Amino acid sequence: MAVTVEDARRLTVEFCRIYPGARRLAFKFRRSTVELYGERAAAVPKGMQGGYLSRSREHAQAALVGRVDVPVDNMQDHLDFVLTLRHEVLGHYGANTFNPAEKRDLLAGIIAARQEPTLLALWQRVDALYASQSELVRAEEVFALVCESVTPPQISSNVVELGDAAFRETCLSGARLLRAADLAAIGAMVAHGLRTNAREQKSFPPHGEVLERLEAGDPGDELGQTPPHVPNLLGPGVLGSLYAPRSVRGVAVAPHDDERRRTAGPR
Amino acid sequence: MATQPLSTEGINPHAPLDEEPLPTFIDDDEQDLPDLDRVPAHVSVTNLRREFGWQDGEPLDNGIEPVQKGS
Image (cartoon, rainbow over all chains, first blue to last red; front, side, top):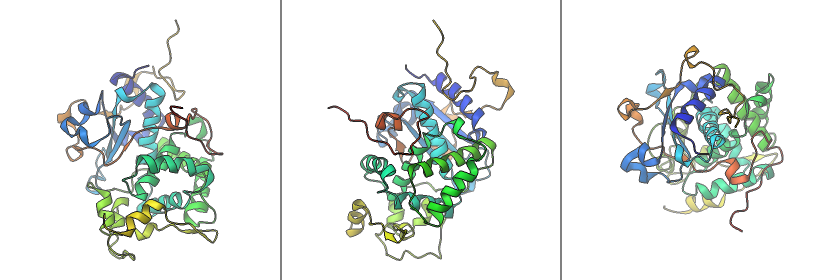
C-alpha cells in the first residue's frame, strides 16, 4: 500500500501523540529525494528511507532542534513509515538526548559488542551499507535499527530502570558485553523519555563532514562537544582514540578490519 | 469492506487534531529551517523488517538473521 504525504502527516501526528518529545523536530515529507533536495538529491541514495538533521548548539534553545526527512514513495506501507520514524526519532534524535560523554559511552559500548552474537548480523549489514562511514556513525546506525523494535507496549513503568541498568552494566562499567536486548532496553528508556518529555537534546553534532573531522583528530565534535583537553593519542589520520575498542571482561576486542585499513595509511 | 486502520501504534489516529499541538511540517521550502537547507550527512536505507524479516513487536533477545534475497 502506497504511502502518501498526507498519510505520513497523519501517522506523524499519531506518533507525536505517543512521543510528544518528537514535536521538537520538524518533519519534511515529499514524494522523492528529488522533491526533497532538488539537484542535491544526487548526494543521497535514491532508495533513501529517511534522514535526520540536527541543528547546531547555537540553536539549542530554539523551538525546533532538528528535522526528519522522508521520501514517501520509498515506503512500502504504513509500517515502513512508522519504522522510519522510530529509526530517525527514537534512534538518531534519541542518541542526541544523551549528553556527549554518555553518547560516547553508548557508541563505544556498541562498537565493543560488534562481535556479540545477538548484534553480529546487525553489525555486518551496517558495515556493508555504511562502508564509507566511521565506526561511530555505524554504531549509531546499529542503535537506530534496534530502536525500530521499540513499540509503545514495551514502554512499561520500569523501563527507565531497566534501560539505565543495561546502559550502566554494558556501556559505563563495561562489566559485560552489550546484547541486542540491552540495546532495545536502552532504546525503550529513550522512548519513555520522549513520551514523558523527560529527555531533550543534549548533544549537538555540528554540520559538515564528520569523517574528515574525525580523521583530522577531532573525535569530540561528532558527539556535539569539542574536548580541547583530550588529545588524540594516536595522532592525525587515526579515528577517535576515545573510541578505541575497549576491554570487556578482560578480553580485548580487536579493531574492526575496516578500521585497521583506515588507520593503516592515507585515505 | 472494512477500512484499514491507519494506525500502527495502537492509538486512535482519528482523534480530533485541534486538541493538541501539531508537529511542524515543512510544506514550503521557503519556510524550512535556514541552517538545515542541506542533505543529511547519513541516511537510513533499510529497516529491520526489510533486512531481517523482523515482525513488529518481536523481541531481539536472540538476535536476528538477514533475509536471504534473490536465491
